[in-house]
Amino acid sequence: MRGLADVASRAQQRLARIVTLIATRLKKNFYVYLATIFSLFIVVDAVALHVTANMRQTAFDAMVRYRFIVPRPDPDIVIVDIDEASLAAMAKDYGRWPWPRQVLGEFLEHLEAQRPRAVVFDILFSDPDVYNPDSDDYFDAAIARTTNTFFPLLRLDEASDSLSQIRPAMMPGVTPIAGTAQTDAHVAVVLPHLPAILRGGRLGFNNIYPDPDGIVREYLVYRNDYGWMIPSLPAQVIRDLGYGGPVEPRVVLNWRGKPFSYRTVSFSGVFDDMASKKRKRSPTEFTNKIVLIGSTAPSLFDMKPTPMSRLHPGIEILATAIDNLKRGDYLRYPPGRALFPLLTLAIVWGTAWAFYRDAGRDKIDQLFGVWQAVLIGVSYASINFTNTYVDLTGPVTVGLAYFTTARIYAVATSRALETSVLRASIERDAKLQGVLLLIDVGGGDHAFGERALDRIRRRLQKVGTEPKSVEMLKGRQEGLWALFENILVVSWAMPAGDRVTRSRVDDDIAAITGVVNAALRGRGTGNGAITWVVHEGPISGGEGAKGGWRALFAEAQLRWLQADIRQGGTRS
Image (cartoon, rainbow, N blue to C red; front, side, top):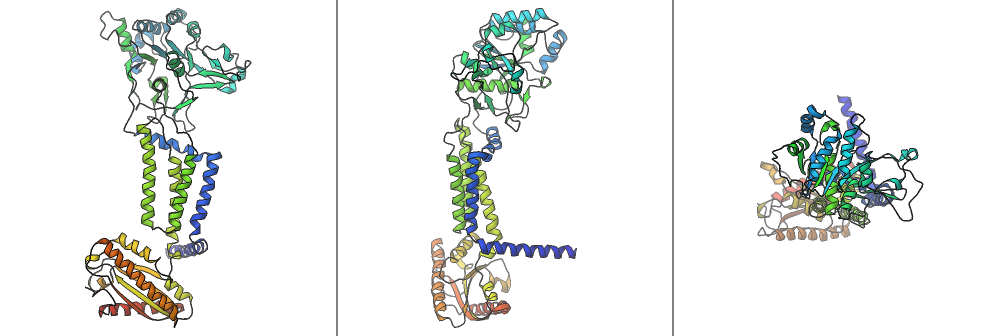
């Protein structure tokens, strides 16, 4: 154990020497050098790396999940849910899944009788029902009698395009982009096989493209494949209903809450009521509604992770996209993204200036904390009160990284960078004259708090012209040792007989006591001036300096006890 302690002690001493070496060479210029390095990163990141841009994902998830103003779901959007209860209830007559498509045909006929604005299937009818061809014909005929039904297609990976025989011009709803459309291009897609769906042309892809971390935050409105615009299913619905739509190819989804926020009814409950002679549900339940037919049953595997839930039903994501495009309240990022790197640079250099000018640890900590809170507050407010998400994650994160590095350097090198009269005395092998100024700042009506004392100490380090040490003796002692509580000790060392320097020290003493008195008056407490004493004497340079300063301090204390006070009344 002792061997480990010796190793730790040597390592600590070596680390202290390294820190001292760094501090003596770089001094406060470290903060400028560090800010320069951070500035280079900010510029390169804005142009090429985009690291800070990717940081927004986690912050966005937290803010949208815990915002206190959540937009309400559109009441005109209704989900008919093929849920687990429906699968179980209908299994005895139709099997668990897939059901014969005549079931969906009959459901569509009853639904159309109520005149909904649109019926949107979140089901890909890619293959014929080889066991029930008549059932397919029934469903196809039911679709043919509608003008408001919409169906998805599946866009396959682009790597399969060369194997496809389908050209974009062959696909219903796909339009060429002027001057860019490639007529000989092929796209790999899975289209519905029912003829009525293809003739109707109300098609759109329903692929969901998550971010690289697997979370769905955005929705692709349309694809530009070889100069052909392939609309998404929500874009097709909104366009046909006359709402227009965004010009952006993708939008950030403005979530309406956790899953099952939209009005949802069970498929089996509605289907049984439609077939019943004594109907209990309203005959206008779906009138003028946008009806989405899909599944939230986990066994059908249509679940995606979103900022709101790790298991968000695909039909709810589709409803959110349609709702966003219909209202136009999808989330946007503000223009002029160059402002964010500029803001980050301002934070870094403002913090660097505060450290370089030694504004004080408490003050720097408070100001930096306030600015961080303001930036986070602006982001949070933007996502609650507007549809523009002001993403300040990058400035906050980079600013915090700079502040943390600078703060560690400031703490680690504080002793090495502070003026130490004792260290200077040990390093000078000559006869010296030591001067001690003791100021009582802890007694009577003018007792200062610990933070106020620290501010005064830092300020006194900048007062005067001669190098000095400013220390605070503080604590809670009893009996005789209470005499050493809350005393500011200012010390100077100069060559013996140097009257010019000694005269300047007197000027510094006057300035220092004036500053402390002014601080006392600024507090509006106390009836008299502070109590202080000056004592001086010879100090040996080299290793004998430690004993000399101890003796000088003891003599100064004796003078104080003997009421040899130069200003400010007597010590109580």
